[in-house]
Image (cartoon, rainbow, N blue to C red; front, side):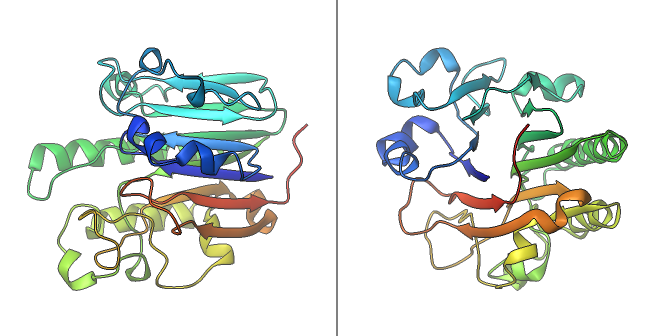
Amino acid sequence: MRIISFSADGIKNAAKRGFYDWLSEQDADFVCIQNLQCSEYDLQDSVYFPPEYNAYFFDDVNGKANGVAIYCRQLPKAIMTGLGFADFDMEGRYIQADYENLSVGCLLAPSAETGNAEQLARKAEFYQLLQGHLFKIRNKRREFIICGDWQFAHTAADVQDTERNSTQSGFLAEERQWMDELIEGGYVDAFREVNSDNDEFSWWPDGERGSNGWRSDFHIVSKGLKYNVDYGVIYKAREFGNHAPVIMDYDIELS
């Protein structure tokens, strides 16, 4: 089973750069797209609705920011939108496709500017709520794959310029500790199960590849899937935006 995740920074711009043409060649079972920066209603062209997929969207209430989408080759049993996080759910940050024994989620975490105390506090609140949710669902009789733009990097291997970014939002000690706790609590960074290279980056905040790269786009999976991760790569041959698609293959059959 192949899952592609991509933080688009505007799906219309990504489409103009050939994202959907490329996607048609990937034979993915799921495609999780974050940061659409438009509403589903704005997507009138058929290119946004490939016929081989069942497409589901969750918009920001304002329709012009954030927004997530999940494309499923096999019809899901249910679609869940939001996480029950009050105001955060109004921002179109999470959508999940449920099957018999597996759920695939698409996540866009909040960002924060370095030095902006209000934004940093709000981002920390989201992580706290998300951690509580993820620890709660460990008890369910199903496995989870939650992929998307988590808005931070975890280890020094995930940031190209650690000295430059050591005090930046997205690489703060408390953000990295949050991921430490999540992994200690039983979750797995799927990409790192199959790829230990320290030059694998998925986001370039300056827009220029070759410097200041970050790996901030994760597939976090429940521990029962630790040995089902077959392959992982960040696709960088073509540029569809400041983020690159993350391609993960799993030894899983949907039921």
